[in-house]
Image (cartoon, rainbow, N blue to C red; front, top):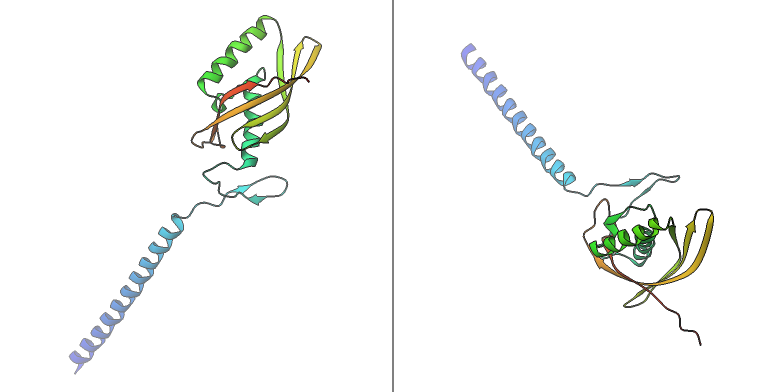
Length: 176
């Protein structure tokens, strides 16, 4: 009888251990699926400032506010002396800037463009700006209306707007 009793207890122990193994296997599969689901989600980005807030995921097409902010930054990158941000400019505009800055430095001049407003129309972007040119302590300000054309590029850490300044033309005002 002792033999059957020990065999019975061994069989019960084996059933218990098999049940435990299946429960642990089910928990491991559940945890793997949960980790995969959480791992594929986009991360939550928090903008740290005076009031912390969650950063919204950007759309593939830039919004009007993004275009206006980009145009202000790109105008500064294109015209301001000492501003080196070539990620906002095409190679052609970078070459124009280098040539212009070389001419200004020969004459011991510095330039700064102050953007007053950016107007978006269907097919064109107009900028109302002031051009500040200084020679030593002497400064002169001129009205500087511009038409701007942009091209799309990929968004990056250096260029989060996904835009590039392709062409700038100065508008001439017609007096009546």
